[in-house]
Image (cartoon, rainbow, N blue to C red):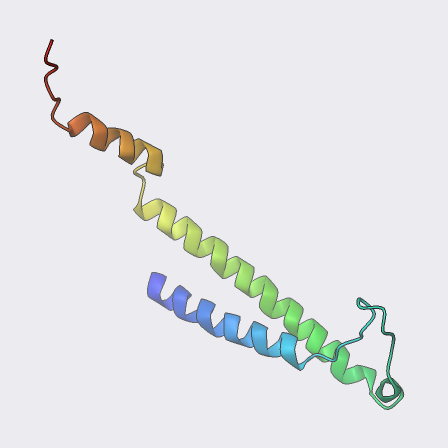
Length: 98
């Protein structure tokens, strides 16, 4: 089950990267403003890519949370610090020379 979710997760990551890169840059964040090509573009393609990106991002977050939950169920050993403390307790004690 985990392998299937990881495969879907990787596919969603690739789709998310592609959909973000295909979107038209508005340039508003940099203070540049709209260019001359903004008059020629249609808003329909932009809204489809925006909705597609939102759906893929939501599915990506869901698969991330499900992978975390599956991993947590498999490894109920506690934190990393607990493991370090257990290893220190098992180490043989060196007798002091007093």
